[in-house]
Image (cartoon, rainbow, N blue to C red):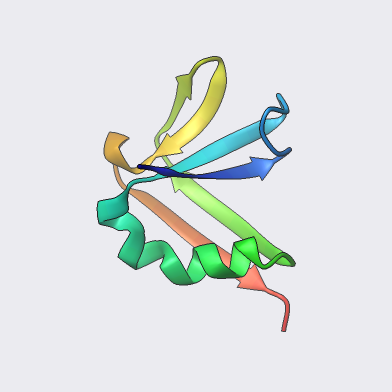
Amino acid sequence: MPIFVDIGEAYPGANRVTLVIWAESLGDLEEMLNDVAGGGAWLSVTGYLSVYNDTLQFNIDDGPISFQWWAKS
């Protein structure tokens, strides 16, 4: 099962980009997911952007992505 991280509006809002993370990639991203889920975090993602069901998404399976996040101290 993938994990979906909405950047911008929450699903089903149209003004969002979704980061799709598959289980095999979770280890590298787990700390970021915990900070973002806790609120008060900012996320920046760079990589191949695709369209799925009329929504923009970063899908780790489509190619490499890089990310950086900042959490409230």
